[in-house]
Amino acid sequence: MQSNRYKAMDKRAFKDQAYTEISRITKALSGPARLEIIDFIANGPKSVEEIARQTALNIANASQHLQVLRKERLVKTTRKGNFVYYSLASEEVYYVWKSLRDLTLNTSPIVSQLLTETRNAYEIPEPVVWEDVKGRNDVFLLDVRPKDEFEKGSMANAVSLPLDELTDKLDIIPRDKMVLTYCRGMFCFYADEAVQLLQSKGYNARRLEEGVLDVKETDK
Image (tube, rainbow, N blue to C red; front, top):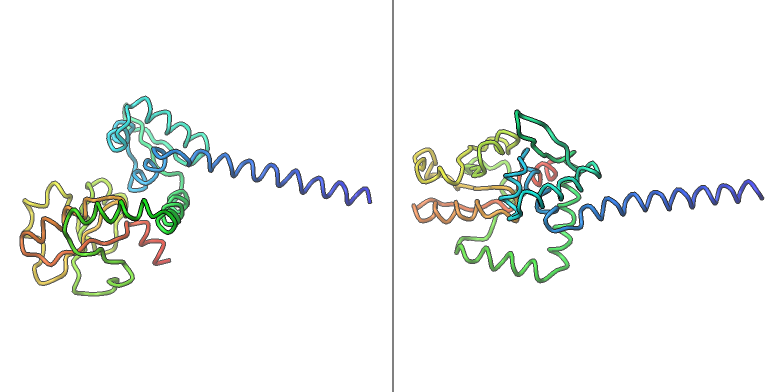
């Protein structure tokens, strides 16, 4: 009897510790700025200055959020000269964020409505999902993120043409294919801007709903 009581106590101690550790990770993820940081640096290492610009934070606040994420081993750092760059500790961190994002879109009418309204402002066709187009040979896949993000990871057979270079390099884009643009994922609008521009120039263009890691997970 005494042995069984000790085993029960051990199990209770394990559960208390395990759920406490999980709650610490959850707490680190709970701030909106930190969620945006995770979504942003999933596309490649970024400096504190770049992260601050992306999230509309000052550098001190951005640094504080990054330290919270680093303390819980959700991000890691590398140094290049005088600059420190932050990246996700693993792809699993992104997939946790993606699960939270998708759950919110399924349960929160506010976020879904905001996304729809923002997209509608571009007056472009509905996004395309990867499952509907992968393997097709009549699609020209266009990555409109910055070059450094393309070099960190991209979709197979995609061509890199950052949004700010698009107007000057339209001649490399075929007119006999559907131009499928993608950027950093569902909450990034570079791809929508690219489609808007391409359609104004007579191209058959659509945006891809997913980002690189979303597609990677789908293709597993």
